[in-house]
Length: 382
Ligand SMILES: C[S@@+](CC[C@H](N)C(=O)[O-])C[C@H]1O[C@@H](n2cnc3c(N)ncnc32)[C@H](O)[C@@H]1O
Ligand code: SF4
Image 1 (spheres, rainbow, N blue to C red):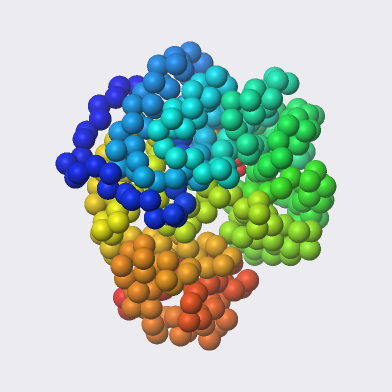
Image 2 (image 1 turned 90 degrees about the vertical axis):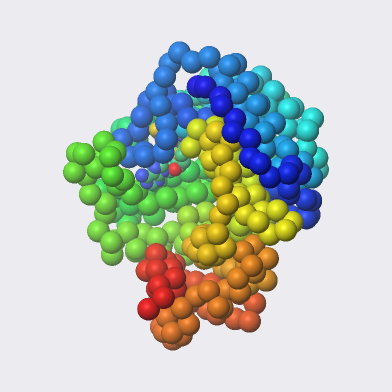
C-alpha cells in the first residue's frame, strides 16, 4: 500500500472538544478466505507485511490528529475484513499511539471483530492484553450445514470453543449471526435464536442475509428469502429478544442500554469519527459547523448541509429512539421539520408507521419493516 497524504488547506485543530463522542475506526481489509455473500472490501492475501501496513496507518492517524486534536476518544473499533488476523502487538502499537496523542475517555470502548477461524486458543487473551475491551465474534450460524452454505471455514464445534473463550476473557462481548437464509424455517431460526440467547453475550447483531451484486451468491443466482417470511422472522426476532432482555436499539442490533455499541452509535447519531485504512471513511464537524467527509487516504471533502441532513435522516431512523431534533439541527444546521416532506410525514403518521413528537422522530414497530420506503418518502420533494 502506498501512502500519499494530501494535506487539506484548512487551518488545523478544526474540531474543538464539544464533549460529544468521538471515535476512531481502523479497517483491516484482509481475510483468510472470501465468504460468498460478502461485498465488504476484503482481500485474501496470505503474505503481507503487517508491520509496514500498520506504520502507514499510524501516518494516517497523525494526519487526522491535526483536525481532531481536542476531541476525547470515546471509542476505537477494529473492523474488517478480519482484524483478528492483526498481530496483537500491532493492535497494541496502534492503541498506544492513539493514547499518546489524543485524550482518552476513562470509559473508552475498544472493540475488535474476530472470526472463529483465527482463534488459536490464546488469541483473545493476547487481544485483551493489547487493550481490546469488547470483542465481537462473527459466528453467523449455529449449525454446520448453514456454516458450510455460508462458506465459513469454521465448524460449529470451533464456533462453540471460540464463544467459550470470548465469554471467559471479556466482560463486554457481542456475536453476529446471519438469518433468513434460503430454506431456513421460522422454527429452526427460533431454535437458533434461543441458543444464541443462552450463551449470555452482552450484545447481539443479527442480520438478514442480503444478496449483494457482484458476490459469488449473486452470480450463482441465490435468492433472498421471500419478503413476507423474512419479515415474520424479523418480528419474531425482535419480540423474542425483547422478552429476553435484548431490546432492539437499532434495526439489527440488540442489547440493554449499557451494552449498546458506543462506536456504532456514533454513525447513527451523526457524531465525529475518523476512519483509517482502505474503505474507511469519517465525518468531522468543526465548531463553526462545517462538515468534512473523509476517505482513504487522507482526503477531506466538504459535505453540503443538504447531503448531511439526508444521511442524518436515514442513519437516525435506524435507531429505536429515532432522531433527536435538537441534535439533528446541531449536526446539519437544518431543522428536521423543514427538511422532510410534510404531507408524506402526515400520511406516514396516520398509517402508524412513524411517530413524530415535539422532540423526536422515530419509526414504529410496523415502520421498521418498511424503513427504506419511509425514508424515500420523507426525502422526496413530491
Ligand atoms: C464486515 S463483516 C466482518 C466480520 C468478520 N469478518 C466476519 O466475517 O465474521 C460484519 C458482519 O456483516 C454481516 N454481513 C456481511 N455480509 C452480509 C450479507 N450479505 N448479509 C447479511 N449480513 C452480512 C456479517 O454478520 C458479518 O459478521
Ligand atoms: S464476511 Fe468477514 S470473513 Fe467473510 S469475506 Fe467478509 S469480511 Fe471476510
